[in-house]
Amino acid sequence: MLTQNGTESTDPIIVCEDVHKWFDDFHVLKGITTSFRKGERAVICGPSGSGKSTFIRTINRLEEHHRGRIIVDGIELSNDLRNIDLIRREVGMVFQQFNLFPHLTNLQNITLGPIRVRKIPKSEAEEMALALLDRVDIKDQAYKYPAEISGGQQQRVAIARALAMEPKIMLFDEPTSALDPEMISEVLDVMRELARSGMTMLVVTHEMGFAREVADRVLFFDEGVIIEDAPPADFFDNPQSERTKLFISQTLQH
Image (cartoon, rainbow, N blue to C red; front, side, top):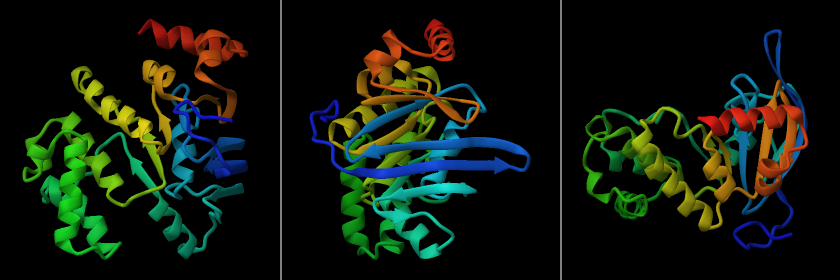
């Protein structure tokens, strides 16, 4: 099987088997079973409260799953802190809110992890950070602070920060939902470039144009289960579930 970008898919890099999650009495994930291959770009969509953000947050243990198995790059997620640490080194995450340190420059935000966690010399980390800022087209903002740049630029710094750890997998949790409309495209452009580079990506988003253009698969979550899982052409043009049809019609109206 070839992914959309022409890379040969291999064994799954993420495996989820019967994954359950509760928040007190609320059963937010109800037996999620799916897998993702190296180099695959998956878009996860669904209504608010459907479990989609919780699901990707379980993949790097920001949320603990209560039943089932999650295996990332051959390592099972458990309460073993060593395993959690190993997986977090492989998995980059970009959030809805940018979560940048306001007292550090954009360059320092990016170099902090490589210097502290990967023990890279400061000069080498800065050189890599500048290259990443160039890649996301904001090298000229390196020495400014987050408050001095736009939301779209802050999100691009956040993407560069995640890439600085050289992850095998990138998770995006609604990365454009906090942005003004004119800033959304600049962040999606960076994500398109990342997708073309062959990065394994799981993206929770309502940007259906991005899903149709970039994704190898679109997964539709509702009430804690996967209702639909299909290539974009099938998902948008021939959805199998009435619930999916309703969601697509409502989403594409906006």
